[in-house]
Image 1 (spheres, rainbow, N blue to C red):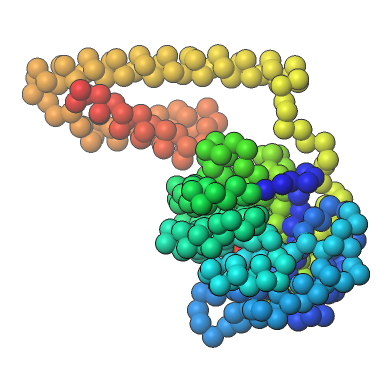
Image 2: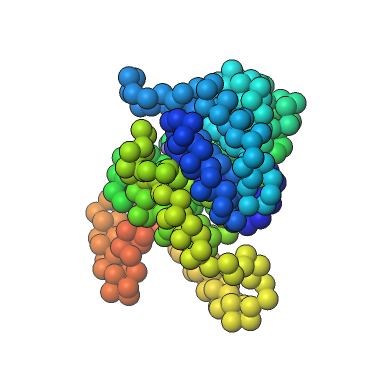
Length: 350
Ligand code: PEP
Ligand code: MN
């Protein structure tokens, strides 16, 4: 997808609720120089039936009328809209109303049958397609959705990181798990990625910090929910910003975060220390595995089982204590040692 400017900002209401609401939010957002596109939910995936499920075609009609009307975005162009599509018919209706940017929502990304159907409906239409991460923390489903689009020759694509639905979502509505978005980037290095701070946090007060974090992680921009009167919103009332809140946040974000770090000598010096430490760690790990192999030989000779639960428990407790005294996070150390132990047991069976 073409990122005209960084950060590429898509903003707008969770749901289109009325012509007045849409016009009001568009008028405010079009005056913000950073806003490149307006979002508006037209079909809303609701967890339980009976709630507001989106206005459907009339909302698209208002978008089309506003696009064809006198309002202009800050760059002087007609208003550009995007919305979520979940069925082939939605794509058909978007095309009929001049909407050529759509996104696949989190609930749909997790369903390969639906992604295939959407990819077929999108084939040859020249639409820009964004894909939100799936609800579950399975990055392969997210990657798979892009592969399905690429198989249908859809290459004008971008990702939206909206967080993952976890059993323990303590601080977030959807836990970000930044490492999964980084994994997606490793798989598709040129794929633009936007952060959706609204659905990650579920709270408008957290949007700014998340946006800053995303910039530090070299994200290409944001999709953020904005409503003229958030407390009265029909959906996602707690997480929508007012246009002026968004304006303040955008003004406050640093514009000098550079993702090319190769020229910084201070960083280079620190990185060479990291390189040396990594080398030492790997050498120690290799030595540790060698000792495991020797232990395996002794255990074999003496008829002792490979897995020794008591010994492992005492090793773990001892190491966690040492690590905690060294200022390391015990949870991190436990996970690391568990991985090392699994590998150590594996090599003892070689
Ligand atoms: C939305 O963007 O309004 C939405 C429903 O998002 P998600 O698919 O991330 O839940
Ligand atoms: Mn929403």
